[in-house]
Amino acid sequence: MGHLIPFLELANCLIAHHNFHATVVVISSNTSPKQSQVIQSAMTPKLFDIIEIPPLDTFGQVNAAGSVFTQLPAIMLDARSSLRSAISAMDFKPAAMIVDLFCTAVLPVVDEFHMLKYVRVSYKEVEGEYLDKKEPLKIPGCKPVRPEDVKPMMNRKDPKYESFIRIGVEIAEMSDGILVNTWEDLESMSLRPMKEDPKWKQILKVPVHTFGPMIRQAGSSTPRSEVLGWLDMQPNASVIYISFGSGGVLLADQITEMAWGIELSAQRFIWVVHPPSKDGDKGNDISDYLPEGFMARTRDKGLVVTTWAPQVEILAHSSVGWFLSHCGWNSSLESILNGVPMIT
Image (tube, rainbow, N blue to C red; front, side, top):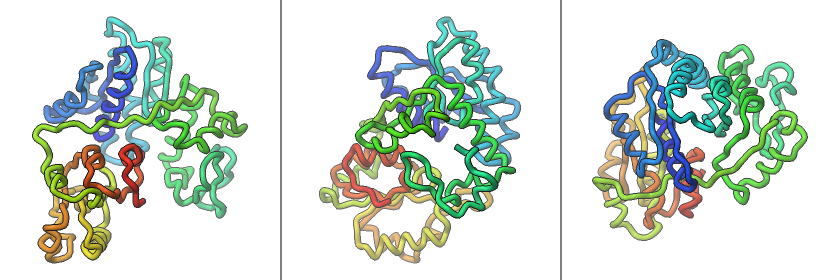
């Protein structure tokens, strides 16, 4: 669900600019009523239909262990027969399918229906393990990457490695094109090599299309968030917004140090922070990790948000002057398009 909602919001933006109708196939174990309500809320106006396929037999098994890099491809592999049935049952067959990079396992099904295939998003040159490499990895169009930062590629015996390689090959060889949520003026130095560099051309046999910038537009939420009401009372460009994304859970010591830094800065703030997990349970109280008295001392300066925050609306608010960010792509686009400087 965490990845589905941004995709639906982007789909709404994309479809709204073109004269066509879309169908979104939802693959999940059992979508709860609350999740269904969230899905429908992302469909305003209703520009596409949603088809939820039956639960998968292996969903619980693959969800129980392993990383997201191996779980999601395994789920998609198991979903192919249900997806085939869902497409067969449609009165009007789709002309094209767009999947994200973890869903390339369904592309053979798309071929059966003669649909165009698009994926939203040079290992053979490296001998041995990436862990053994001392020099940064040179990728045309990108700044050199430290081998230790390419974690899924560190161990060729790791299932994550095989999954990443398979996905990369499927994107390069099985799709009709690659869609990237960016634009030429923002990333010309990276996009040009993807289209022109000989090494890239050896790998990518399909065109790379930019279709951005696409973000969910700020809108009126009902009821309006208390966070926005608090922002209404702050001076223009005076608040720093701090968020590391839905998966950005800090360690206990990092939360404590961040709190001290925020307090000592004497800066107005909105801090979206989640407690560190304990055996997979994230329900513990965030106050257990904050310096004693932090909430009372900063009560007039800022807000600590431990649940969902309306980030697009926050960044669009005139009282926000900076964004301390983990540089997730959605967050980066939202900050850039609202003209909010980032501390990264």
